Length: 205
Length: 205
Image 1 (tube, each protein chain N blue to C red):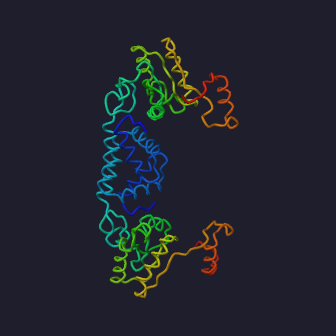
Image 2: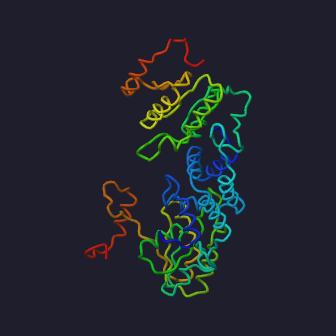
Image 3: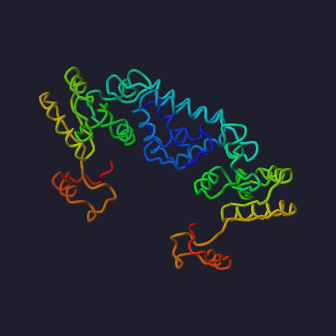
């Protein structure tokens, strides 16, 4: 593209570094910002700078936080003895949105993926083991994605945690609500038959 | 969404103000930035702040520029007597990319659109008339979008400029290269027959 201004080109280049944003989209976003008030654009810029400078990771669960320890880990209402292990902060938000979990989290910061060069030492696995070793824990829920990386991580975590003699569970796999049986893949449908549960009148309590 | 951090929420809100960016996409972009080095994120933020603070609009053609007068208006290679009138800076970039135009531009900053409350006084139309009145101009090319706003603006500009007795042209409408006749709409195909041109062996010179 032929830019009439170096400042414009710089801003477009910055935006097009973001995932899923090409040069044309970046230009559209930059021209949108240019049509806004200076104060608004400065606020955007300063928010990004503050985000990276001031954000912290909870020293217990490693979730993104404004403080040394996050609001979930400090809350007296949460059951500290149930730990839900997740990949990243998006999973914490997704589970929090369900309003069905009242324990605490442990954010791994990724999944074991030899293809991407991510090994167990790159994740917060040692700190999870230490957490389980030093505090009373009644259950560890492994809520990881159902793909190869998730399964590898699940297997590794189970190996590291099984000696503590604490119940280790994983979230249920099966047919989604609203899903039709005939369109479900064989593996999911097969697992959902093997791991069938007693009928309780209604699924939504 | 339940955010674990106010800083995170602020950044997601800023991104989701951009056109075409929802909360989920915004979160993905913010988490991507969080995974980058602090220097890189600060550079992004500062680029945006500088963009709005330092960018100028050319005092002749109103295109986005780093200087008082843009590089096209100051270039000795451009024919100053041929003015191409466009809606915004994206059109200038699109035409520049063709390498087929060697005149100068006039950026209106929008199109007349009574539905959106944009009238002739909101656009750089008076400065175009003044430009034509005070400098020698051989041709005015109106390169506007082929929609209702574009046609309204075309009509209004013609009314304002016709007394100068300068040839006023518009870009050709017709079947695009690679376009198939049977899929073309009737208006475009009809116009392309009415405005047919002599065959010159090859269209691409």
